Image (spheres, rainbow, N blue to C red):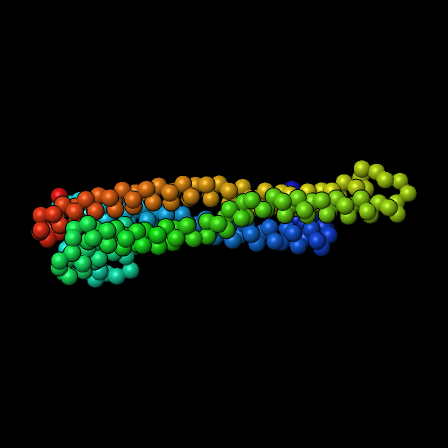
Length: 231
């Protein structure tokens, strides 16, 4: 408790510039933690939705029925969205008639690629903010520390005899800014690396599904039959 009060006292007694730096770093930390919690739920939901969809997709059921159920719900995301876009485009081009199989498959792949890019953009949203907080916060805190130390030594210009006791409080106040910078940067860097890796894994999973689904569409298109089941 004494340590907490001492830190609070140092913050209150710091110079206005150092206080502004600490307030800025505190705001950056709060923003990054908000992004961390939201991104955690988003990535977890994306993985759960992908698992559930793959179970339905590879169950051997009617893909047309699966498509209709997804379309009826609306607001599909992740792997469901990729499947919906690809199936819709393939069915639309197939109804036109007279189109080569390669053209239908290429159109379906383009549609799935668009859906994948939208999903990737959604998952990567605000990751750049975490990277910015993680990379710049230590330097902002260092700026506050340097400014505080300069102010502490400048205040000694009118002192007859400078002692450690007279300069130590000012230096301690300045060092709090560095602590704030590290407090804001470390969680942001750890979270950025973690979620960037998880988003990359999801992208690879989406790529694998697109190839597998394209193979299914190619097989059914070559047979001249409807897309009935993922078998």
